[in-house]
Image 1 (tube, helix red, strand yellow):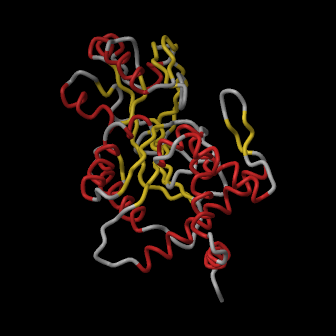
Image 2: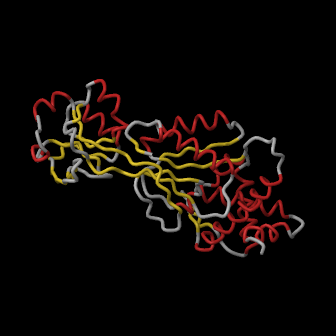
Image 3: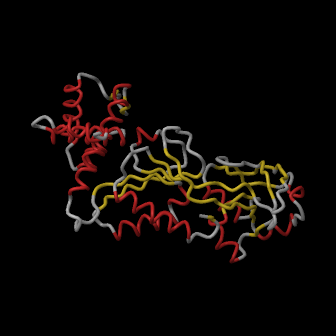
Length: 317
C-alpha cells in the first residue's frame, strides 16, 4: 500500500508545473513560520514583492485566504492552519524522496530549525549546535531561544527542546535528561542564615524564578522525605540569568540547576545551602511532530544534543 506521504507527492508532481507548486508551498510555510513576508523573503533569498506574489498566487490557486494581514502582523486563517499541515507533509515527502535518491556521497544539506530553552540554549546546547554545524556545513541551522509555550505547528520548527512537559498533545515528546536543582546563595548570606534544616529557611529572602517554584519550594532528601518552605521574595524574575546574578550578589536564596552553578560551587562564590536536600528535578524534553520519516540531519543533530547532555554535570541522561 502506498504511504500517505507518497500519495501527496504523486499529487504534487502530477501537473507540469509541480516544482512551482512546491515552491509556493515552501514560501507559504516559511511565511507562516516567520510571521512576516519580509523575514521569510530574506530567509529564501527573495524580494519581499516576490514572496508576497507567491503567497497571493497560492491563495488564488486554492481559492482561499490563508493569511490575515494587518498593518503590523500576519496570522493564519483556519484554512491557512489546515493548509500549512498538508504543505509540510508534501514538502517532507519531497525531501524524503530526494534524500533517498541522492548520491550517498553527498553531505548533509537543507535547513534545520530548533527552538531551545534560554539558559541551556546559550551554553551546553549552543556548543552542541555549533559543533554540529561545524561538522555539517551544508546545513543551515536556525537556533531560536524561547522558554515559553509555543504553537509548534505555526512556529514550524523541526525540533523543540524544552525544560518541562510541552502541553501540545499533537507532539511526540521524548525525555533527554533530568536536571538536578538545589538552593544556593552567596557566602555572606549563607553565613547569616546557617540553616540546619529546611524549616530554617522559612521567611528567608528569596530570589524567585517565576517560571518554576517562585519562593515556595518543596525539598526532598535521599530518604524520600518532603518539606515545603516559603521564603520572602525580594526579587522575582522570569529570567534565570537575572536570578543568578541577584543570588550571587547576595540578594537572597535561589533555586538553581546544578549544571548552571557548578563552576560557582567549585569556586565558592555560591554555596549549596542544604547539601542533603534538593528541589524537584526538571526534565529536559525533545518534542517534534509525528512522522513516518525524519531527515538524516535531524537524527544526527539529536545525537549531538544527547552527547552534550551526557557530558553536562547536573543533568542525568
